[in-house]
Length: 260
Image (tube, rainbow, N blue to C red; front, side, top):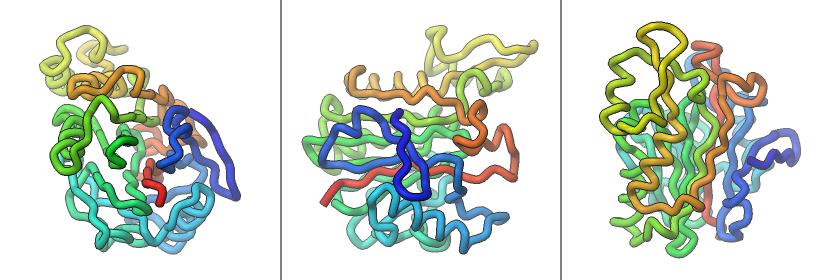
């Protein structure tokens, strides 16, 4: 990933998406919290989101977010949705973990503090998506659902779609029990997603590889998928992590917007 600082809010970009003139995108750093939680100062979160928008170059008032519930539900964002969840949490789209749109100028953003953010861009059909893929969403194949929605609603071809798999908890730190490991083994019987853990009865799961495999299964080309490879737990100061910091963890965001 490419690190950038424009103004007072540092952020990252995927290398391959950065070369696309039709789209703008970002993964915010852990320098500033942009998640409206019960513990967070709402005025400060609004100011941080405004600072992020200015640094990246999108209209904060046309940002769209959702109430993320670790589901496989994909929401299609229309022009009238612009601004929902932008500067408050009350107006965000309900119970949705992936957002898809063909509306230029509307920025889609998902929030994370260990879950995998995935950005999708179809440069031919001009369609974008932002996906929140926690382990439950990964097991439910939410990235596949998002690509299928791009196909069905807007005619996207998977072979045209570019994907960026963002920072999240890495296999180095994502330790699970036998029950969770078994759910991943059912989907990925090869020995490259679930590994023996550091203690008896514990296992390590590679969420990056799981989501990459799911994108390949629906028709994306390997060369079109960029994996950040940055573990949110291992990079304090760069990304927020619930596994590391518990309820005190803030949220970083991954967003994408079609240029007008």
